[in-house]
Image (tube, rainbow, N blue to C red):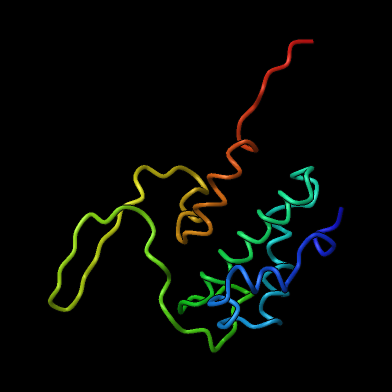
Length: 136
């Protein structure tokens, strides 16, 4: 199973039209090439599940690219602000200030929790970070 055979740019565009508008077709392909480095094709055996998870990774990368510190897959004309992730801990109306907290974060989880798509990916892939002992 190759990533290119299970990932559909057209389906991704339908699922994430706002992100697609920011990064375009070329940006999606570049994000996909980077996403495959983060989620190897053999990591998930079910092709439909793999395609869904890969789509979340591409969306996460595209969302990160819409800020000023763009990853390799971001369109240079992206602009925009990343979405708020976590629970709101304080808010102010004059000069608009909102603070959010994702709770305790360990290891690489913090990188994934920067966007709603990354947070969904982290939750959906919990099974890959747990071991199951099967006695011989």
